[in-house]
Image (tube, rainbow, N blue to C red; front, side, top):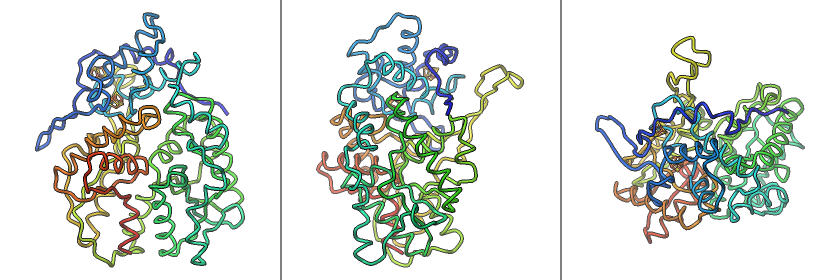
Length: 436
Ligand code: SF4
Ligand code: SF4
């Protein structure tokens, strides 16, 4: 398989399009009401020089390209102290906007190629992927532990390799191995069973989507797992009747939808398969009248937009050949694939819920702090940053926070514990399962 994953050198023209204006420091929305706030977790924690938003990171890219900068531990820290939340990308309006995260990840790819990246604490991820096919050092047989309650209740979940089904529930490593969030695959499967859906899982044969490897710049490891998955998905479509892949993890969703599309065999392997996040999948069930909320949940809830189901899914329009404006110019964007409205509509439809918004929402959401390898590489900072987001939720008067990413879910709960607050974070599927 050939992959169109750009090197830093291939992105050089875009790198020089940054005017160092600094707009990427702040989340702004002209409203009404107009809102302004911090957008860059790295800048909030480490200050402006280099760390904050794309302005600093792009300056590093220039330094690497023209040979002014060499790898040092401090410099590597600056490259890896970024959650790849794309908050800065959302603010920038210049022509290199569409490729800002690619520039950051291309620097990481260069670090890995040069044998200096990722950071020592993050190397465990690559090692775990190689040894266990997941980033949690989890033995293969543990991957299906979450299905035990279903077996006990004599409602076993199909292994799709043994029994065909049109829907594959791609669970993801976080739901399978990270105990504090294991309830989300349980809730998802419980909802699917309540709705009478014909679905299956890959069980012990499921492997990591490769999202973490890609975000850390480990292209080889990403390609290895991505190619294996794509071959599996093709086999599932051709031989096991799979038409839809549902994933509850924002990272898996982004990886399968966007990162895999960088392969020249994407259409051949995934063409004809619908890849959809659980939230959107369930919303369609709700809209079509197949799912009704019959119980009440008298909760005061706010909603956290994960980066990977939000602004990571923005589709940027670029004038590739210069026929409309000038070659490579940024023309506009589409947020059609971003899951902003759907979770809010579901929350609004659950009887009893009092919904309240934080200030930084949708494309201006403030990252939980766990992405881009930060939770593994800089765990204390990740949790401290999550505490900032939890405080924002508490300021609205909310008592529960809901999200649709197990990574955000885990990290925000850790942030809440750090603040010694009573606020609990839930995945939206947990709420849906409670009221069905
Ligand atoms: S990345 Fe964009 S917003 Fe940030 S300094 Fe450069 S041009 Fe300005
Ligand atoms: S991607 Fe997020 S953490 Fe990284 S520089 Fe941009 S705003 Fe900061």
